[in-house]
Image (cartoon, rainbow, N blue to C red):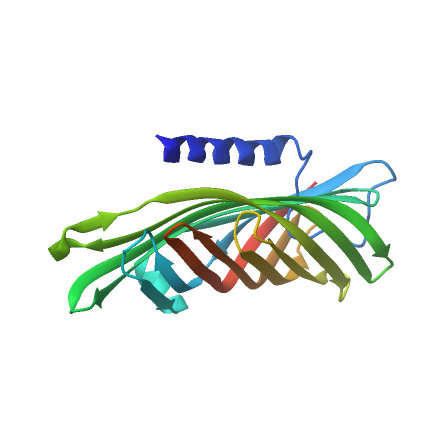
Length: 257
């Protein structure tokens, strides 16, 4: 019931992001053709994200620790699903951004003394941030932001022969600080760099995210992107320990308005 409630809150959060953040737009905004002063601009971008998964999972006190090191090819074979949605909006120098991601993956293996086991990780995260455009010229725009990232994480270890099968879930929220740069490379080409750090012991011990994408503006409305994204979290509570890193290539299509 708690998990269902958490998922419903996450769903409402995504809806709020799409409706309240005004407009929400994605991981890039154009340096050319800016809107008149006082008007909102923005775009929204769904991504296909082929992330590899690495780290360690200890779901509860006394449970075996499962080490995961999965390549992009392994993730394509074993992934239970993944989704990533990014949004960005701007009015004058005020900037708003958000992203929502879901990923689930599992790994077969063995634990001492050779028993077959399976480790599973499912995570959803919702990041919301606001900030200020501290510099903008014809080629470069630079933003500084602060915000929150909410996590819903479930780490499980199943050892059928030992009768062990548990998947406790945890929800927590991290404060974060972020920076974002947009560089115009040519009339239709640009590059976005984004990085954030957070946690600071408030929710998790630490969380980081970085994103680098190249963008091609096919029209005034549609922008196509390709790049790399990494997301990590180190969470410790009682006997639960999740030290997970998701990273890999992505492609997306943005609708600007």
